Length: 259
Image 1 (tube, helix red, strand yellow):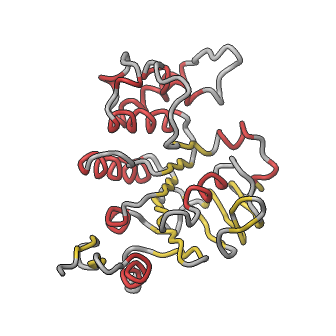
Image 2 (tube, one colour; image 1 turned 180 degrees about the horizontal axis):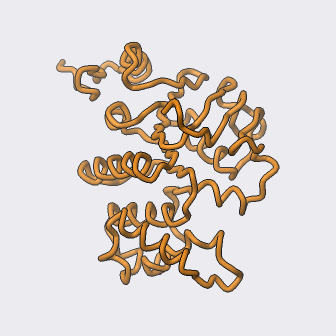
């Protein structure tokens, strides 16, 4: 990772609402091929951070640079050519065909009639291949299972062909197999497709096992830590342990405490 290109730089960033910051100033960098998980308790600001990084809302203070360009100077279209965002919100048109939804990832490149060039078609089919969604193309989105919907949304983001992909709670409502499959696919996309992937998640055990780095909301601060760092399990324990569960650093999972 040391020789990787820096795609995003955060300089003393604070995010929040109505100019009220949710945390202290945070500085960090995101490099090509990195898989970063954002974790923390509910309401600490994980989704707000992700939306701010994607240009949906403005920071309270500080700056975000995309390849050394201040995001504040970029149009939404230019940001969309650098960042693909996958949210948990419902689609406006759930009856859309899967192929048409994946093809929407090319909107930021097509003309006003949305004609698909050969380059567009190649990127769409590449995304379909990577996410293994070929058997779903003629189905309506609303008829898919939650796991299939998530793969289709990932395909749309991959078709967008951006250096960065952001996801907000991508494994919500998925069963354990789909959760693991999604995390493994995202890690693979970061490695093999050289994408910078950031996601907010409550899946701490998966983040500990698969992420390159973790941005952890901790009592008004954001910590930039690595799962393999010696002190990381102690930090996780401090934030998430309760009277009924304890984080097990050996298995990177939480254990129930017997009473």
